[in-house]
Length: 351
Image (cartoon, rainbow, N blue to C red; front, side, top):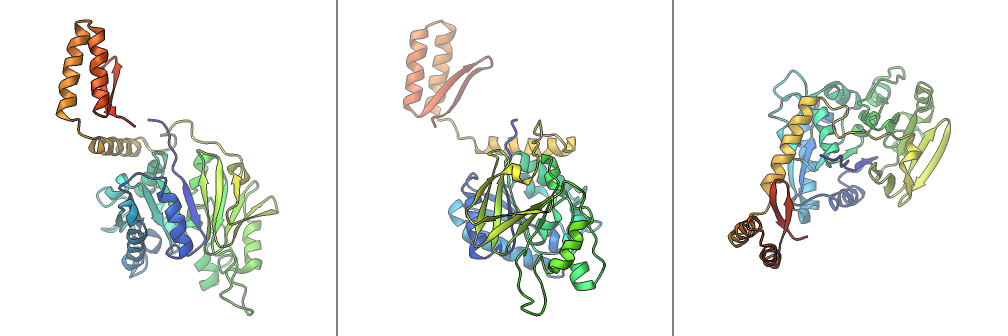
């Protein structure tokens, strides 16, 4: 099967705001109908109300994407070693059918601990290779990067600034990329600098100095995001403000509606094959689910078309090419096209 990377959409905040609604709409237009979406609880899995947090997003998607006949599943992959483990294949079954996968608010470091090396994370990457769109907001945008900004540990607990490893989604594309949401936050008013996801410019600069060479940081303003299309080679800014790219101590700012090449993120190297870097058993599971889904959605061939196909097969065996061509046209008139292959006649609806 050919690699058909889905888009990756990153949102600085406001997944249920007007800006979030517009981004989901842009992504949904590219996906098949009826649309299947999955919302993972993992980032907020440590919270007692994680089901409500994910449920609110799911209900928002059902409402906003109703024109796409959206079915939205909430996946309670909260914590390893529990009945809600991100390694439970039964729990994760909706991921195998999802065209759109979302993760949002919570704790970045908790998300990494629960998902690194998990079945859930491998399935998400496999689904992306098969065309599913990935949408991340707030804490999840930090967690998927190469390095994590430990927001809660710094901002709430007062720990020293550190730069731990993230889920490193973009390593699949040869990129050393980390993301910071709430880039322009002003909750602290004139008294406290809460920009750079609440840690402030000074502590963010300290974190920046800990990054390895050749690293790129993507800053996402609130209610603003970017849609990354590796297949098309472009990134598109969406929302009310801008995104910032920092690399080698240089900052480039791209306003809303700006389009820039993915090479601005670094030197891109797409996987040579669809399954590259995906555990073989996970890839096989994902591929079988995708093939089964396509079989289930294949239209039923009308009885009249089947009858004409049998007649055409008999004509071909008798080398009656004129009748064979005439029968092909009769089938076409019914809205179907015939392709002759080594395995026999293949019929499909006219585009």
